[in-house]
Length: 108
Image (cartoon, rainbow, N blue to C red; front, side):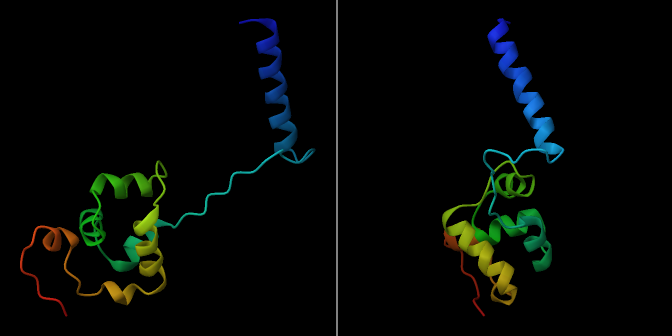
């Protein structure tokens, strides 16, 4: 490793230490405005698979959201907002896979 690169990395580590100790303010902050997907799902009382089917995404997507690897966007984010603030809307709804596949479903 070249000296200039090493010195830059060393200075970054030192700066991180100063920030962590509160000696200096960070130059920027990253704020994630995301829903607690696991909390929303558990409030509805459904499994990851059922939740994924309910909102029309894959179970892998739900797992990625819950583990923080991905963040919901677009229509999924709106559905999560609705589920978080008015979970009764989802009571008794068929899962999205039944609707997408054209199977007959009883809508309350």
